[in-house]
Image (cartoon, rainbow, N blue to C red; front, side):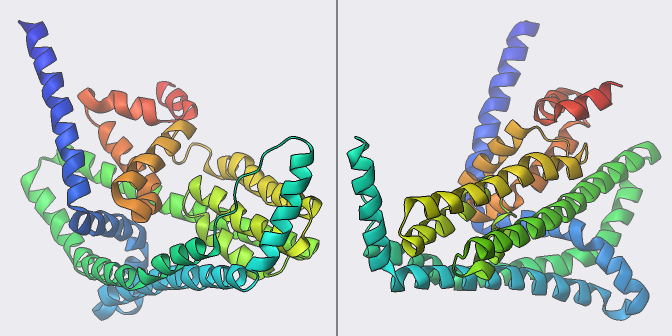
Length: 342
């Protein structure tokens, strides 16, 4: 009988998980902004406390406006940088085709068959489709800012409600968990900002050194894309490499560009970032990839942006319960598990 109950409970948990994922995917217009606003409230809370000392009568509005400005600046810069790249490719597409055909002829002499270059119309169409979503992004940003503004005001009230409804021991445990999640989110954002700055500066310097056009655009683009783990690194390499093929019209110049940008991404992702993180985020590399894949599939680009802090938060919550602690163990890095065992 106990075995039957165990199997039944696990099957029910499996079915409930599938239904929950389907519900999250179907309710994207509501659940994504709510989740993003909760994470942003945790990130912006120190700013609110700082504003309490300066302008206590307007600290909530001030923190919300600062957050909205930062988010708007991020997406506006990404939008205009991408627009510069699309226009540059569109204006010089003929040169890219000539350079591509020359390299394909060289590869064919060695018996290597190349892929057909995507047509200009298709590339321009993709670019226009991306830019047409700018208004939708602005609407979501406004909605998230509104949720953050009201959510900040509810933090103190929620703390008092927890104090009334739970005992002292439970209250301490809940407060500790929330503080740990907020700390990890702020740590992640700080580390990502620093590594993104390093990536952007190194990319711009390398482009300037080899004589690649638009070095500042490539630097800004890689700075912004670095906020999307793994996927952003690959996306940041492709456009400047294709542009180098168009500009230099040679395989050596293209390979030099590709090698330089690849080395920058590899060094920062595999050495600089782990050195800064140490045991901070406590996620294994495979967990990062799985989280990015899952949340990107679930909520698209927005899911990719919040995949890591959201997964870190879920890991911390799972570690608080005996039945879900195994999830936290599998997602955590080996160093974190070793530290916990010690």
